Each structure stands twice: as C-alpha cells, then as structure tokens.
Image (cartoon, rainbow, N blue to C red; front, side, top):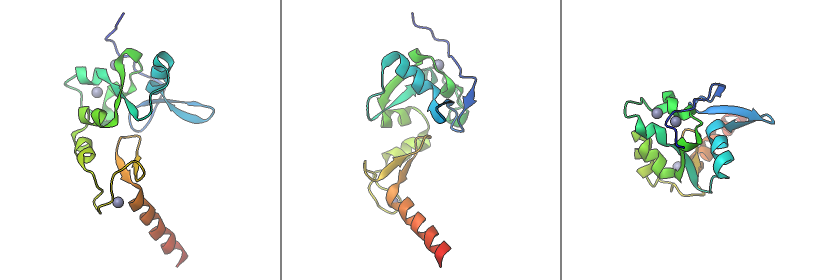
Length: 139
Ligand SMILES: [Zn+2]
Ligand SMILES: [Zn+2]
Ligand SMILES: [Zn+2]
C-alpha cells in the first residue's frame, strides 16, 4: 500500500532542514535511517531524494522545505547526486554544472567535498585557506 502522506520528523531538525537524531552521540539523518531500515544500505555514490518534494509544486524549497523532514520510506528514492540537485535548488544545480572551482581546480572525486546541504567545496582551496589562517596565527 502506497501512502502519499508525509511522515514529518518531529524530534531534532538539522540546520539544513533534515530530521536528525543521535545514536551513540553520532548524528544520524532520520530519512536516511528510515530508508535504510526498509531498503538496506544506500548504494555508494547515491543520495536520497524526497519524491514528495517533487509532488508539491508550491514548496518553497531550501532549508525551509518541510519535505526534508519527511521520513516516509515510500517517499524516498536513492538517486545519483547530480539528479537530486537538479530536482531541487536551481543555484545548486548551476553549481553542479561547473567542472572547476572559481580558481580552476577540478571538481573531481578526490578534490571535492560535499556539504550536508549538497554544495561542493574545493578541497585544494580550503586547504590553502587553512594554511593562510595558520600562517596568520604564527607570524
Ligand atoms: Zn513525504
Ligand atoms: Zn519540499
Ligand atoms: Zn579550488
């Protein structure tokens, strides 16, 4: 039986808008937990997409999207990262289309860090920023 009703998580909410709870003092995303409980581990390289978000054309999206806290496993689908971004925030989609960071470092597997919000961060650039900060402290 497929139910279209969302199951909004009412306990902890992460600042990105997703439901969270802690297991052994580690934060776990509630929707990921719910999905894995019903479907097994999320395959490598895939992220969860809230299908119900796509049903609701009036959704404001972003961190205030209420679908993010939905833990109904029937509303969750494991999709490749880029697809999830395309369905969601257009700014992030634009970001995903870029193959290099503003300075020209490649956004490849080794050099890219993905934030919980789905943004890509250039590792090379953040390393340089860190080094600068350390230098500023020691000199
Ligand atoms: Zn839902
Ligand atoms: Zn939504
Ligand atoms: Zn860079």
